[in-house]
Image (cartoon, rainbow, N blue to C red):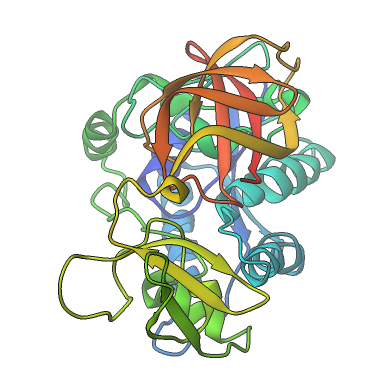
Length: 343
């Protein structure tokens, strides 16, 4: 019998994942990954509640249950990475780094060491012969967050929810009487929680106020409390009164200046070409001239593009393509990999 260790977060998706695998005849062990336990000002970390929920479902299903403590590695590889990227003026995606370094590396390695044949998670994605494919539910599809996972890891991974929509998952969990069937989905970055990214970063980074400058006039319109908090295309949080709304169109970290414009067609807001770095291909790299599709943020529409030497020529210009974000590439339903946006 194939032994599968299921990452159980205490949510409905991973709970149903474990239930389906039990029904399909696998020898299932539930695993809670203890990645972050730190309370922040104004926010209690819910890890103990999530652990208790995961344990309750494991008891319901009659499966073994373990806790893997990855907090040190998570703090270093995921949280530390995010903080450093913001310091450099970029906008990173820590969920992508978590999948690369923790869930499909550390968790997989530890599970295999402890006797597992495979791992499984509640991600909305499909895997076929080590290839990553988009989920049935395009609205919930999470291949964007999985593009940096190694093909060898995917060969040892199951994604049972790839065939289902979120409403179907809720219904199936209710039909099975799972303890977490009605639990709300967590929102945003898990370790940031409800306090917001600005408040989180203020715990770790000292910032200085600086000028908000109108690109049209070159005049200072007001002050900001740290250029790291502003991202391309941002409209809210500028506190610039009167007239047309202003949008962030750039920033200079060395000068600690944020640049804004009321012009929605500002050339800094729109990109026809994207340069990528830290490229990662799940199996084979595309060839120069290949016609692909790209997603520049989770849930953004797929856009036709042409690949050439780590750069993308977009069929239609895209708004607010931000350094530090990931651009993820597809051939039809197949996710082939991607890279980090440089400019």
